[in-house]
Image (tube, rainbow, N blue to C red; front, side, top):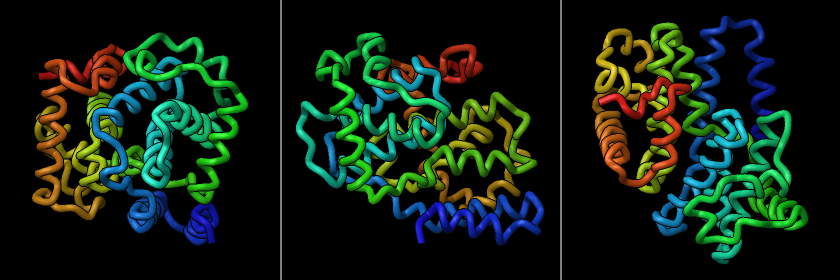
Length: 275
């Protein structure tokens, strides 16, 4: 039985339950299957991966796709590149196809080869060939889907963030908190060490813990949400500390510049600029 079938069975089974009970089951379901889509270590040079993700963030932002599309695209590219040796000349093609696949799953439309030509020049496009025919993109899509066994519905950092933030006492109405959590989540997604060291669920819990307790100075109301995650404060401390270090380094001109630029905008309450 595939993941989609399991999800349908879960929703059918929970038809008689309250929203809180369904959320609890969904979070537990994600926790059970997240190990199936974890990013493997040492599949790619960390600096090269950073450039790849940086470009994906640029394209994703320019085309105005939903946050979950970005996280899924990065996950798809990570899993494929960890399983297949790809020539340098095709790395951008893999990312392009991964984004298209994610769009077909999450969005109402997906970009063609033409849309990618209008993306502004970046450091990435100076290193790689930025133009690919539609035929090559389609071919790479098939390669990726076949290699991954068509397993596209996977829990990402974003999936867990949405579930945790849905808790009534976890700041659902606090947009500043949510934006900070998503900022830290994208920093973690961009960082090779963080992605391969911690699970998506732990990263998501740590982003909210860091945002509430360390950055926004709002520690009240965390206990129930913490219980929902299944992690203790002690378990999240190291990951939360790393996320704050990444935020500090990025603010001072270190890697993950596209993430910093994105979340420095007023659209995201300029959370990247918060001391």
